[in-house]
Length: 79
Image (cartoon, rainbow, N blue to C red; front, side, top):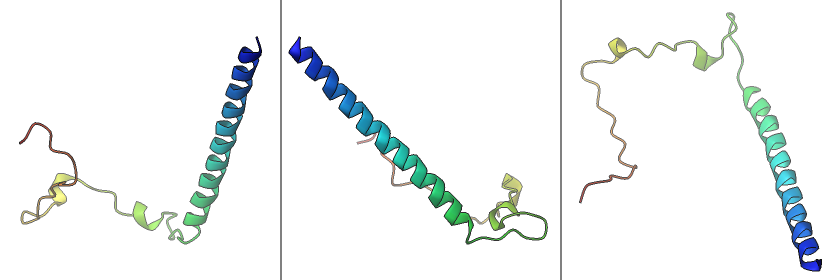
């Protein structure tokens, strides 16, 4: 009986710790995202600098462009 009560108390303490940590993390993320946007200004049309040109169609890639190869990832199935 006493062991069960201790186990339940330990679970409640751990749960409250993780919930408190999660809330603190979410609150910090909201503040930092707002602070990041303060450095940028919208233009006359109401767009941020990264929203102006979003056309990434294959026709815009030049013929002599160097191909991007991600060498940082794991290569599975090779010796």
